Amino acid sequence: MKTMVSVKSERNAATMLHLVQSSIEGEALKLELAVELANKRLQPFETKYRVTSEEFIARFAAEDLEGGDDEYVRWAGEFRLKQRLLDKLAQLREIEYEHPILFQPNQAAA
Image (cartoon, rainbow, N blue to C red; front, side, top):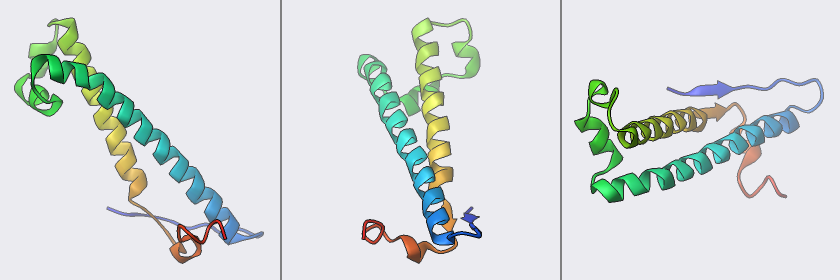
């Protein structure tokens, strides 16, 4: 599913579109950093129990976690946070711009 962003401005549509695109890219970079940090927080659990977070979540049902070991609950919570971050990042990466040719990566600095 794609999302199209179209900017209309009485001033300069190209400048406004660049501003919107830059803002969205900035948010995507923040989300990427948050995912990296989440991965670092998940790593000790995965190392200690010798299982990936994906396998851990697949093995344990919600009722297994309720009232269970605090460490397992934290692990599951951290994994769910990472998944939400990845979902938001995917949504931002799906955005298309009406005039993408205006903003090729090496032309923005020119």
